[in-house]
Image (cartoon, rainbow, N blue to C red; front, side, top):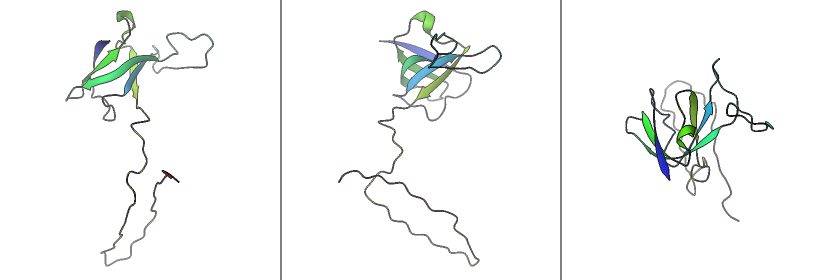
Length: 126
């Protein structure tokens, strides 16, 4: 599989990591972009294109290398908006561990008010 190096003028989002999938979409000359996956006649202007899996990100976060199967003419340019998605199997945002214990203390000599406490849980087995 071939690789493509993408270099940016600004730092790559901190959430991007090796293993994420990179995409691009063509931007409009008037600014912004539109995508429509339900369009019966998709064009290059309204469909996102999968570049591939992020292989590495430079330490300065100004470039990344992506494994790709795109041809040279399909590689994104500066006129494209590049974005990424995470693998939802590896990046679940639920609690880890078996239990939690919380102790709340108020060492203030004046009145304090607690507005909210929340938790997240899921049943892992029966």
